[in-house]
Image (cartoon, rainbow, N blue to C red; front, side, top):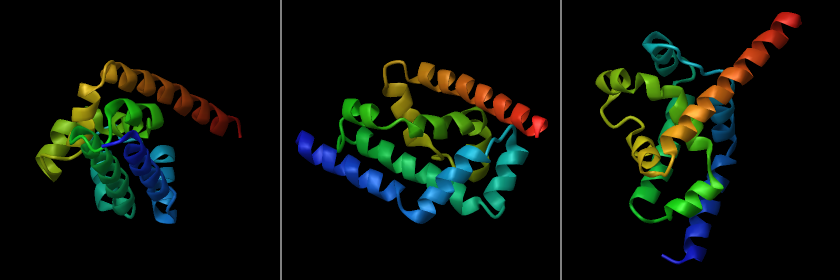
Amino acid sequence: MSKQEEAGLILKLYELRREETMRIARDWYFREFHPQNMQDFGAAMMGPHSGHLRMVVTYWDMACAFVLQGAIGLEMFADTNGEYIGVFMKVEHLLPEIRTQFGPKFALNIEKLIEKMPEGKQQVAAMRERMKGILAALKAQQAAS
């Protein structure tokens, strides 16, 4: 596949992320979804945001599958996307339980791609630390209000 075709697919992925329902789902996932355990995850999966959770994770799992299957090159994808790392970071610690309860392929392509990337696991760990800082700042801001 040519670089132009890869770029076209990446632009198409970007267009899909701009769709209104997807924007709402992504906003919820990153602002409100912070599962600490399987009870938190299960509540989201079975609650009113189930569609949002599934939409975000399956979207990025699909996009990562495109890379793993060669439709988009790893370097171009990694240079133009980072959100999939945040998606994975939020559920990584629960994956064995999630896969037992909800299906063995949950976020599997995201995980495979991160493992394939140079320093992929380090990027996940760094994002996790940034998120802890962001959540602590938000908590402090709410306490001050």
